Each structure stands twice: as structure tokens, then as C-alpha cells.
Image (tube, rainbow, N blue to C red):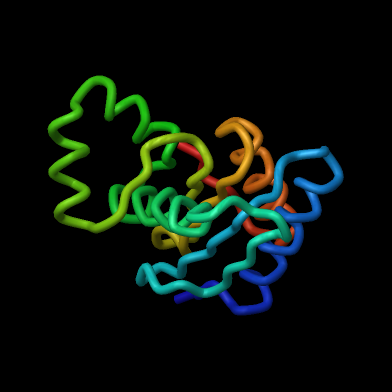
Length: 141
């Protein structure tokens, strides 16, 4: 069974941060979780606002825990807020806004990436750039 390697996770973080710098985004925090939900790699750009790391982890954790990208979780939060509140109790921190993306694997997700710091759409674009740079496939959902 394929696993997310440390090199791949670090590439995702580096490329996502580079995307942010290259596109003039606010300082970003990037978290990569493996398929088990364990933190594989993390970095925060200089000047990142306090707690952006926790938000990034929450985006990734929600995507991984419910099997859909955090953009979809945002839609679910509007349609079924009680479900999202209950899911937070069941799986832990969950941030239902764009910026949490699954990393596709053959037999299920290899992990998830969460990012926070700019607008949610810009956060998601940086995640997608990071995953692409690693040679893996994003599942934004």
C-alpha cells in the first residue's frame, strides 16, 4: 500500500509556501497529515497570524476525517450545521472552509493538506500547487 513520504510532504509544504510568496498572498501556514491523521509536515511563513497553524490542521483533519475537501464541508455546514458540530466532537478540530484538500491514493486518501493565512480560495489554490509539485493528485472535493 502506498504511503505519503516525508519528502513528498515537505515538497507540498515548500511549494505551497512558494506559491503564496509568488502570488503575493498573506503569510501562510501549511499542515500535511498522513492517512492516519498524524502530522507529517508543517511550516508557517514569517509573519503568519497567531493560530493559523491550528486552522490549517483543522482544515486537513476535517477533510481526512469525513473524506471530502473542506470546501464541501463548508457547504455541508450551511445545509446541516448540527452534523458538522457533531462531527467536530467525533473527529476533532474541523474547519469547514476551503483550504483543506485530500491527497488521492489508489486505495483511499494518502493524507490531506490544510492551509490558512489568506482568503479561503487563495489558500486552496496554494494547496493545489503544493500537491501538484509533489507529483501527487489533489482531491479538492
